[in-house]
Image (cartoon, rainbow, N blue to C red):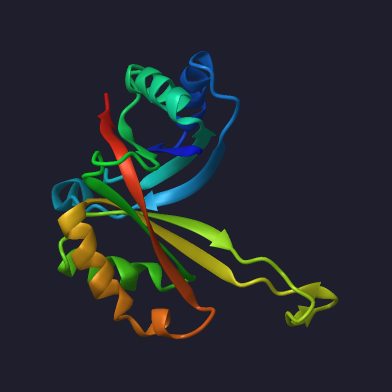
Length: 190
């Protein structure tokens, strides 16, 4: 079984965090650019609210993931870290992910907030092309996507999933998908 270590940090810090992870035995990782959705009215009013984030994903075995996460937690880099994987009786948190067409991420977050979520992270992505896709000058037009990620306590996650499932975009085939993963460890970094 493989765990996924998920770290969300300010833009420009994932490389340093990956260095700490490598020191603990991680082979490699993937970094995506994202934006945070947690609101801070005071910081926004002052013009210093920076929501630019990087999402670092590392896959490792259960024993290695604890060691790697422990080293990452001691790195001094601020952010959030979760280990997603199955560990009977230990899960108090859930990772809720919604992959939707570009432009629906804010609607997903608005519904999630009304259901109890305090924030999340939105990653820009794109679909994969197929032979049936519309082409423009011979190149397939690949649909742009957003991945909304929220690590939530289980009771809040249940309410958020139920609320988000009611969105019209999730009822239409091929436009969005929602899934959850158990989180067996969660920590704020630094």
